[in-house]
Length: 394
Image (tube, rainbow, N blue to C red):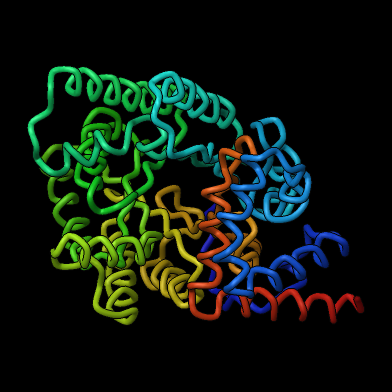
């Protein structure tokens, strides 16, 4: 049966947004976002926390009970079962995300590759986990990717090292193909992104001919990515594969600008937020116009972009549960978007990061900083939680 959702979604419906949270969980989220709203604490927190962890002070328990619990599913795939169940009850899928990064050793890259494959195997046959994901820097040395991007000739040892990276990438994507589990390759910094884009297109050429398996990620806060999306679609059409496109605004803006100034090149970042928003909405419009040959994951915490996409689906009479269209947000953020979209019948899934607490700290710090840097994000979260507390009489 085709599901066409003509219902105007009320993203302020906190009863639906926080249905899965107990009173104590809601109160904990309130105090956590109050703490995050302090810019000073968010800036000072990472070095202090890293110092405490390094010298062995017992703060893991505090981290686990607060920021880790809000933004992560657990330390292992098994630990994530509770979160998977909570999201499913709210008609929201899970994207298991092994969030270990910044490593350097081949043994760690091999382990991470194997763990990513375990997430694919866990998702196989379970409709509650409709998508999987990995970062290329989880299976490759950053400096190696940077050297390849800069077009500097590799040494023999580096060529061998990159061959291993390609084999890991192919092993992950082949497992996804064999298990029929779509997998997204996350975007990263612009100075390694060309190499990641090349790997992603190679994987799509191998595995997206019969069905949609591999997605690349396009960061639309870059001024060149709308053009890249369209160019990649043309490549896909010519080569005969389906393009998988996760569309996001981006997560490395300050770092990108600082590096451009330091190295003396033109910043790849859009001149202003309005330009980013315009290109973002143009990108999701383009994907919907070609929905049979482009798979779209709309990764956004922006209410207006969610409305743009729901309106596009209605305008083009596209099933709200078309397998080529997903909304996505991060665990612990924008529950008002995720759960209200799920309640209205749309495909929606949340990233559920997991991993050892110390190893996922870089991810957690980015989430906290993101909440303070996105205009109004923390105050929006707090306002919604306060509204729900009042509705419950807390």
